[in-house]
Length: 250
Image 1 (cartoon, rainbow, N blue to C red):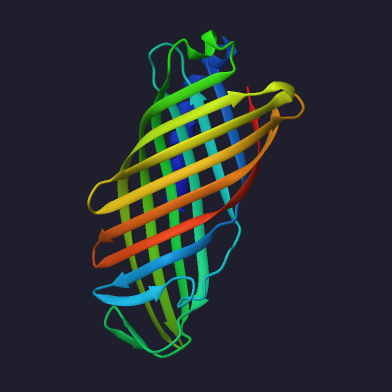
Image 2 (spheres, rainbow, N blue to C red):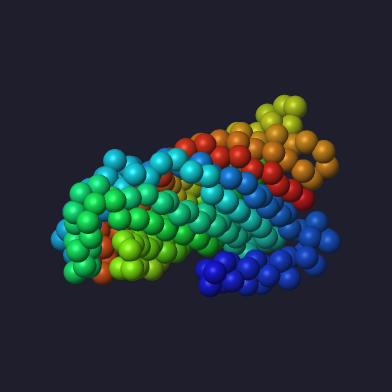
């Protein structure tokens, strides 16, 4: 909840001055909400105890989660802004006896893994490329900070143990857009960097279609690799799957 509040504050800060610019046609805004349907895979360890693969040992499976993004293109030399929020929570149960954070659990203890991801990015577009291609092609580059909020909870009867870590990860950002005829567009976004205590590789491919006025619909595929080695938590997890969204652009 506190992360969502932080994102909303940033959005408000962006939109307040942006509204005046938008009235002058100096700002373009694109916002979308939708659903992300990832399937998790990979390993999780805590304090040296290997709890195994999150899909086979934890019993996690593909689920659908909300996702939202906001892209604001600013005038002149002011950097553009890209915000994105992707909260995820998987429920399952571990097979076999295990120790988690100094507490012994027997087979089939309830397990919940929460990974909320929040991106705040600043970027520029390659100058004059849109003009040279009559608005058909665009390329963006910049920096992104991804806030990883990871929590694992084990519950058995009246026994509960929760371990969590919050990790900010600086990322490089690269994106490209190809506007086709008939209101269709192809888009791709890549974010990634290895900073020692964490590594994130994020790739998004999107097909977008303009419907009526500022409204559009989009669908695509998203691949997220998240590696964390911080505060006794070691996670190497991949979340990948399709997504769909609706939005406005003006």
